Image (cartoon, rainbow, N blue to C red):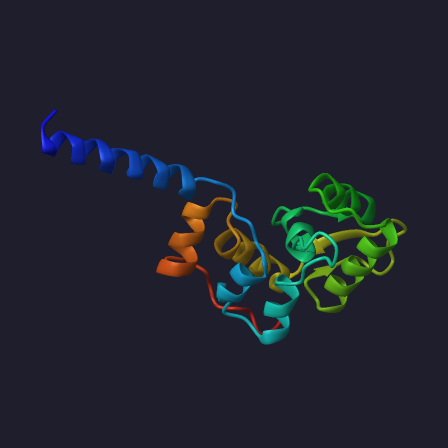
Length: 160
C-alpha cells in the first residue's frame, strides 16, 4: 500500500469518528449550559437554563417543548410529558415549575376555566423557538447554532 493510501485511510477513519461524534445526543451539563447564549433578559436565560437538582435535566425546556405553537395542554398532559422525558419529580414539584412558567408569563390559561389548559404566550412562543435553536438534540446542530452562531431567532418580545 502506498503512503498516500495509508493517509487516506487514516483520514477516513478519523472523519468517520468525527461524524459519529457530531451526531450523538447532546448532553446538557453545567459546562455546556454556560456556553449557550440566549438573546433575552437574564431572568428568561436563567429560567431556560434551570435544571432539576437530582438528574440535572432542563425541566423548563422540557415543559415548553411539550407545546406546539397554537396548542393547549392540561397540567396532567404536561406532567405526563415531563415524566416520559425521564424527569423523576413528584407531580406537585412539576406543577410548581408549571406555576413558575405561568408567573413569568410564558404560558397562560383562561382564569374562568374549570380545567386548566395552558397555551404559550408570545414570550412563550419565542422561548419555544429559542429552545429549538439553542438546545438541539444532536451535537452537530449545537455546534452550528451555538459555536458558529448560525440561527434565525427573532428578537425577544418586550410585551405580550
